[in-house]
Length: 60
Image (tube, rainbow, N blue to C red; front, top):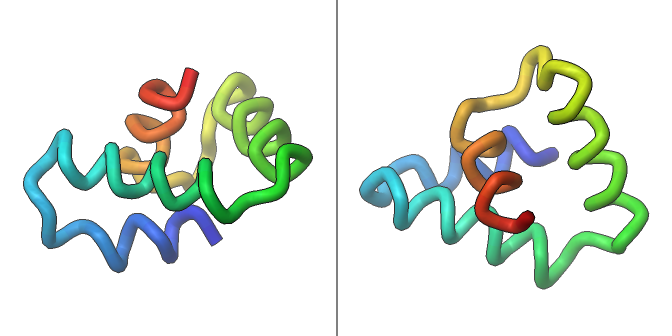
């Protein structure tokens, strides 16, 4: 799901796209979903769009 959000916001310039992905996840994702995403990034982030990884870094 995070990759889908990134794909829809990739048209924005770099940092702005990461901020938009972070904002969407922060507003609409349940805290448990965010915690799972953070854990997934911590364990390697296999298959995640780099924009999602950048968004997670901003959220922390």
